[in-house]
Image (cartoon, rainbow, N blue to C red; front, side, top):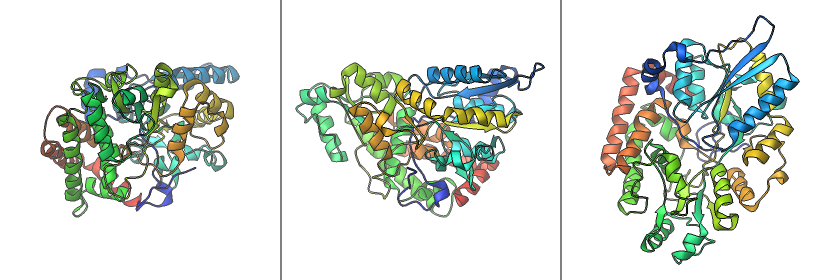
Length: 466
């Protein structure tokens, strides 16, 4: 079920798939601020071998941002594992969207903190890996096991798998069928093209309904527009990575395509098709407009779509791929990703114990519980699709696995995601111009290249080999 990216220059060892999720990222430019605010003593330090011969593993885990109920599922797995392995204690430290990347960046600078950590897929994993902070999990778990994991290519470099996927998550367009009926629209037909999407938005607005509900106080909506719609202008991922790496004329081409995407985004806001308070609502607040029946459409994650269907009624929620706007070769790819990527920190003194626990999470009973308790789709090809219950769940899984997927945000350095991608989207939702948003990208790309040359070199090395 591994997916191959259409039009990619990359070999099979780095095939692209899956979203983003949740995909929601923060970053390395926050490191100094986090260091000052937290200080070295504030980090939960992993204590491995105790005097009593116990093995203590510290696990910094992120998952709740994508899938409601993930923390409870993980706590239950830990309780089961500790009962079966009384000499092992696993301490779970939940991470928020805002802390997941900067907290590990700080830990890596001190070479202490978690034994096992979670980052979003691809560069948030591979960039610290290139800096020596991540140990390949394929060094400890055999291919006979990892061959069953889905989309490991997102976190593979030079033949090594650096992180383990837990679940597959897609980003569909969802719509409220009752509100479509109220606006005189066919409730069973999703807008497939951008022209159809705008026509639906106009009809909904004319009936006093918010066409599209989102929040961008933290830059997340803008980052998702980048991930979904900048991708639709590309023929291959290398157009993006070469632009970021400043190879030849690729930087100028990237900025030109960003101008087109942000102009479209600006027009969407100016047309009044997005809630007027989008700039001041955070992601969760913007999303809540949909289950509250205030907005007719939004982009969301599989987990949220399933949760909202319980509130609104499954018969009232539709899900489809985002409308197609661009004409690049990647425009028809979907937006699924493994999002929550688990890995072993290079400084952990119990790497074999880390790997044993991580492998346990992929057992058949745990993968089944993952789906039953959270609705998430396990990233394991041994999970029987017949266990997926409900029409909407089956439809979402079908979107996630039907063909190639790319979550574009995975392929920009976390520093650029934080300093350029997210603030640029905030420029648009605050009433700024596409030119101003793209100028921010240009400035931050140059600053990153000149002020963080080691990161730039790591990225460039990865981009050439990927």
